[in-house]
Length: 153
Image (cartoon, rainbow, N blue to C red; front, side, top):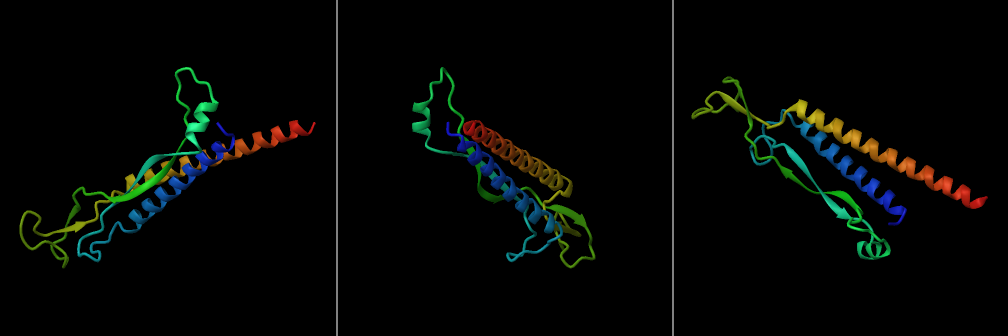
């Protein structure tokens, strides 16, 4: 496994966490958006994170001798951002012009399906994961600098 794969893996994590924070921030910003371009309330967005291959896996695998282990050279990426199709929050406000006039939700206003507490928790988790990857980059950089110092002596 190349030493630089550590940098690639950590930076892929930082990129994915930044995108997750962007999606979460957009959700929080739209917590009260009752009408979008299509006439419906804003729907919560979710970042879908998947693994991605870092480096040339075949060559790295052949260069290593593992007994029953598979080399872990995977990073992550946000493969898509999808709408959360769970039901809207229904707030009773019969005087609101957006309130339903008939049916099961008469007098209720459809609000975005966003829970601010959950979104803030997601933001904190993404922030901490970003910090962990940044710490890994710093540690890897320090180790590479020490290796260069050893080589100079």
